Amino acid sequence: MSTKVPQNQEDQEIDLVQISKKISNFFGRINSAIFRSIQFFLRNWITVLILIISGFGLGILLNKTQKSYQHQIIVTPNFGSVDYLYSKIEQINSKIKEKDTAFLSKTLGIKNPNDLKSIEIEAITDAYNFIKNKPENFELIKLMAEDGDINKVLQENVTSKNYTYQKILLITKDKTSEEKLINPLLKYFNTSDYYSKIQKETYQNVQLKMKQNDTIIKQIDGVLNNFSKSVDHNAKSDKLVYYNENTQLNDIIKTKDGLINEQAIHQIELLTFDKIIKESSITTNIESVKIFKGNLKFILPVIFVLLFIFCRFFVIFYKKQKQLTAS
Image (cartoon, rainbow, N blue to C red):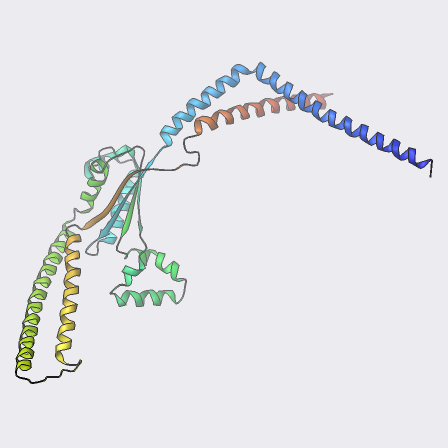
């Protein structure tokens, strides 16, 4: 036992020496790597400086050219004009892709047609208003949902086209204004001989219906006034009159209440029926958020320098391997 203890101590000392050597070698390699890196940049400082300046300048240029702005118009297509609106959007988008600036500027009246990058339309999902006071729509959704997911049914193009509100999305390179972009588009959408005739007839029909409802409401008021006088007369003569809830009087009151609600709906309709495509909200100049968000002037110089370092080390590695194979 006395001979093994010194041997263990000696082994431990050898292990510690080896570990310390490895640690010193590790830090030595780090120091040499740092020194070689400094030498590399000192030898190529002109090239590195040119790459940094070039990357910074290119980044500034790309930040300016890649910046874009989004504009949103929430509209209500009246008189069954939703398919008409969708077709117009598709037509305009195709003209943008074709770079048909003549159509965009002369036909549409857009001031800066080259700035317009895209236009698209999507429905604003509003199932509540879609089925409100429309039992046939509710039954349609139930029928379509029997063979699939209700959420998919609500998002399908066939269903979504019939929602009250549609969102038009436009993308431009630079900031713009309603006068230069939005108003010419809305004017173009509302220029249709066919739908203008439907608009005129529908508007007149609603006004006529409101007049008829007013007449009926006045007649009902007359009946109720006569009934009120009759009740007062019977009360004065000490005669009691009992009425059942199921009498015609109850039906008359319900009819009047329904007509008043109908009048309120018609008044709102007249507010929106002044245009074929009625806008309810316009939002302009929403800056699009990019991945790099304006930081390309800092990212590109780093990328250029890293690519340069990679290429230099690749060349050095290739030359060494070529010498080894040659020898």
